[in-house]
Amino acid sequence: MTTLGTGLSLTAFALWLVAATAEAADLPANLDDDKSGHVEQRIDRAWEFTVAPYFVAANIVGTAQVGRLPSTDVDVSTGDIIENLHFGGMIHAEALFQQRFGAALDIAYMKLGSSTDLLRTGGRARVGAKQLIVETFLSYRLHNSDTSYVDVFAGGRYWDVTLDLNVTGSIAGSFTTARGDNWWDPVIGLRGFHRFGEKWSINARADIGGFGAGSDFSWNVQGGAGYHINETWSAHLNYKVLSVDYDNGKSGNSSFEYDTITHGPLLGVMAKF
Image (tube, rainbow, N blue to C red; front, top):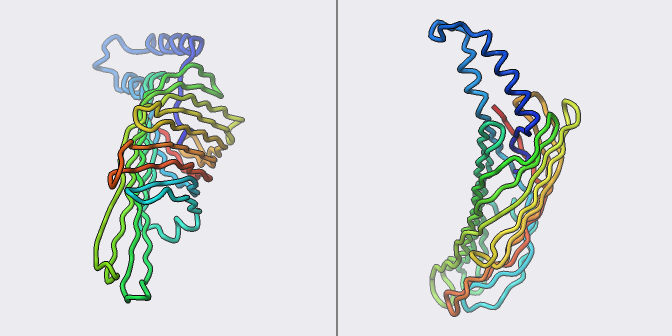
């Protein structure tokens, strides 16, 4: 989720330094005798943490090719995913140091499954799909003010996609097969945030990746608005579009291609402390 992070410009840093110097002047000569906790509080404020569970009402369109099977169109709606969802979870977490340097981790996982009866033989076919996307980034704040910031970030996006088929009682007998692949995409991007008054904010993020190191190419854009309940809690509604074009370059049963766009509204709740 891209609504996360904070920073200091040179002007803000100067103001902070003046305030810190004035506060230090009020400390007693013997810091060991200070019971006010000023030093500990200032150290705590050097770090800021954010945790944000979220949900994407995803739609997946594109093509996929597995093994010796021909390339197949993919058109999975949000309703299809919800109907066939066995398990899913999405969470974003960040740490920010000195309002300048950040690190982020984002995990999105879903497991889908459906089954159908084989009327001719009385058997059953079960189809499953698992997708894990993990993003890890380091960020640097290019601009910061009381109401807005701009970050540049770089890192990686890990994909793990598996398609499996379990058949019992068919003409060919019973069998289980699974095909898929996993890969890392290097990623670079930019994101921004602006707050209107005490309650409302907007945010945006864009990145590109892959470059042939993992996928041939990958890109992501998202943006939306946030409502700030208080200084700790806020709710965010974005629209997210994530594209990937991957081909493992193999042939025969080992062949795997995944060229899709996943898009949909993203709803999240964020806690900052």
